Length: 308
Length: 308
Image (cartoon, rainbow over the protein chains, first blue to last red):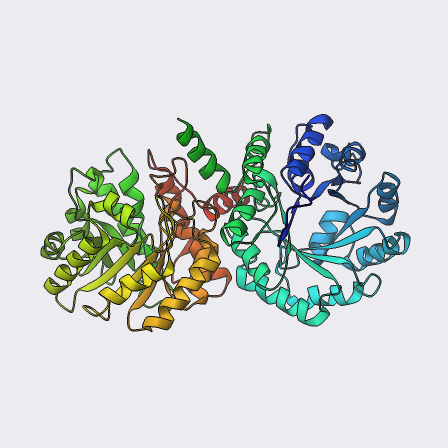
């Protein structure tokens, strides 16, 4: 399949989790599985397929176990799932998960709003999770509001670095994802924080970036992180994933925009762009989806003109 | 008015020219004047108000002389107009223009398509124009397809640099605007070409950047140019200005996105953001306008929620 294609950056498709979770109307399980399969066929080798969370809290992702089960057959694709606790981590592993994502918000008001805990309490939960996860199961620690908080504004760089310093020892080879949750980080800010983090903690953790395109800075921020050596980027097909704190705002940086930019830069993504555009158009067309991104619209319009 | 506000970058509002020219339905002159006045009131101190071109070729801009006349009363705002020839340059100056923009496409097929001349013929026309323009009238040389051509693809950096070398001597203190006409330049490309240009020709010409957001790289490219020392950026309110070679594609990078990014970076633009958002919403609502950008939608939605 796609492993033979060399790639300089890894793009993590988070549409099936971050994109789908904001859509009210339940997407049938077989349709979710089809999106994951098509993403895999387009060359996306890491896909966030869902969350092990309360079905009451996020009904859209109640079928994560089924989607994960299907995705596990798509080797060499690595499906990853979000887990909010040690207990949910165990549940995910019982369902075959080999890559767990634990989200912790650096900002106290945002973490309280998300999981009704202080960041310190969530940090303790993370440590409990780590203690129960074997070394051969991958862990990503996603630091939400690493740059900016919808309630508290700009987050002091020292808070984010202190959280990393606190949590790195229990799993030194973790992947740390710095998340621009609000889309309000600017490229200088993204560059500065990654430079500080890599300088302080080196390359023992793997670094990744999760950005939103709410204000148009999505690709500028991806580029700024890339310039600091980051090689793993979250993105969502069709730009799916609205921010609940800015209704009408667009969501995650679009996978097709990220792929387009890197390919223009001569940076291989290993992704079949035509297949990705088709997939993104279908994702954007899901009833209730809030879509974003630019490349899809520009290139699908162009293609239809070329055909006509 | 607005001169007292310190600014670190100058944003040139090109909506009334590059944005309006693509709209079929004629925008009444008084409405154009109102947009220019509101842009001035929002703190935009340089505004491209139109073109002195054949009214048959671009009927939308047939009233440029009237819009210019009104804009000239908005001191300290500097209105600029596009002129394609020595003859049109004289006409513009007779109508009071103090800042002329001459567009020349580095790529031969694009220049032929635009003005039915080779780049060499256009270069000779530019030299004739310069010979007839007094030193106290400002000149911008806009190099279209400085990065990429819709017909020929990526433009060799040496072609763009050779054109600058050829044309700089006749007016060393010119402003040179490198234009990403197709929106396909990537941020590394923008950074590399500006670095090469500044390295070869220094700061005697003033440098500016004109970008499109067709594929989502608008702000990434503005940021890349900024990092190379560029401090003058074209932008269009509401992101107006579709590309005729990619129907459905969006146009110029949106003024509100550029202002938002710089202000987030702590770079003063001297612009009243609230007034700009209102103006951009009205520009995007012009019948027939193809709008773009992100900040407008995100912030106007947020504002309406805050009010409710």
